Image (tube, rainbow, N blue to C red; front, side):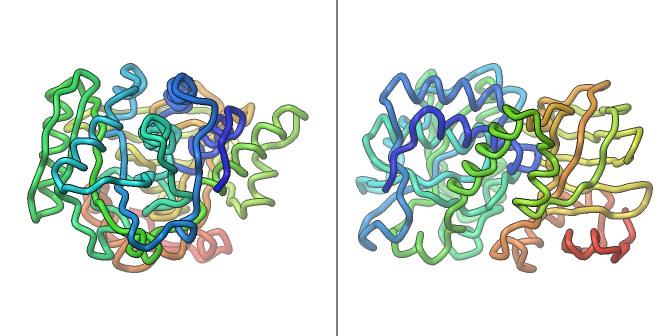
Length: 361
């Protein structure tokens, strides 16, 4: 166990803002969430799964809603309210919380419940990135039911959702959230520490903390953030230029759109909350579950909610975690990719970067 103080928390926001792959909440949202966390204590307790007794129980915590909506309505109590509601529904007392994903918002949302309840947060998550739908996790693939799912808003409007169909859990959660202002918190996928150890992608909070610290320290020395990320974290340069085109809309609780760069290294990136595909003309550069990440010209991470037309930005890609690159994990994304016109299957980013050209859409 170790304690995460303000500097570590803000490094986590920076790292998660990059390694979420375009989603998971904006940097501005994450920094404001850190402010909220610190209103309840000086530090958050971070533990590895191995430190827990196998009989302990915990649950996943996440913020739900479009990233743009979440930027304007910052959560404070709703993650804890959702956790307590789930405890009542299943008749268990939880002794740890689990981040749903990597993201500037969703790496911090569960810390609100952690510090308010006095229980630790797990150094790990079931995605190793941000994802647009709640069934896109190693927990789901490992047989942990998504429901019962507890939902709460900051206004204490709450619901328990029960269904055996994962898509229905996603659909109903999004519909309720959209009706209640576009922002909620959920607690779901309660599990024993034994199941957590079997299914979690370990160490992800520590990884994004290191990424964030590298960004902060490199910027303070006026260094090349992109080069540091490429060398220390095996990043691949995907695009560099000015945002010449930005189309998008918020629909059914998701931000949909496309970013198009012109200039030194053109690229076109399609997203549904998170960046799904990167293309140069018709050549595939990267596809989920690998990460397609963006920074501005000063090395500040950008989510898709932060990008604006006219910005000078860089896109850099990273390999997803091996647990999330298995065929069954990729298959979770095929419906979204099909809507975007992509049907060619998963291609590892390192193979594409090495010159293994693949057709785009």
